[in-house]
Image (tube, rainbow, N blue to C red; front, side, top):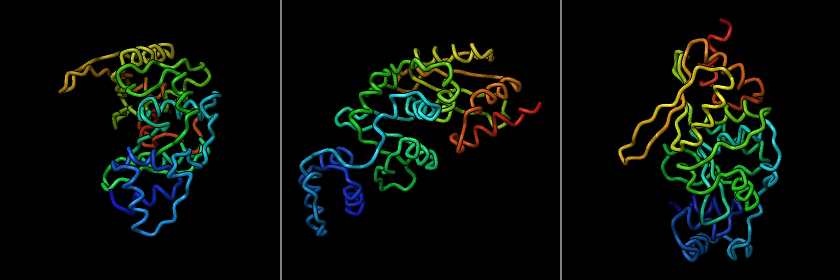
Length: 255
């Protein structure tokens, strides 16, 4: 981690105690970086008080199509920090991270990374949001046990769109789609939704090199994917989706 990246994170408003586990050095070492470069320090930040970056902490309290889409992304591509009150979104398409920050009324703060090919990570610091996600059954170390949230029927299409944007794969010919998860409970919940939408769907399983079971929930058929697209993109606004996946699923929608 370069001094410049550490200073950039500090200037975003993050307290030293939140920076330390991310940058991999102690509070004292972070202070030394500030001293070395003549950076004036804010007492609230180095004393560990909450950062002042903006975010709508009530975002996960009320169901909307925007909230449901973001929740779908978080279930698949998000992470809850066990040690501090932070949540992270990882996405190769940085446009998606900007859309998330817009919906959450949050300052756009990315985790610094010296590797230019690494996946960008959006940082949201909020004890309230962390608690609200736990209420929805989503907590640290969620990958093997995350439940399928109790999403109101009205918002299921947007939630599923977020799930597919996060961990979905769509064949370029538009005949096959699958979502990968390590949670059997989540896979079963997703399958139930697809079946309720009268889509031809199934679950398969395989093992990773470390012995973890991976589940894939499939929707197959040149007529099935356009049916799915009609459902999940009905409430999509501001191109709040992975555009390539939408195009692949929708290419036969007029047939």
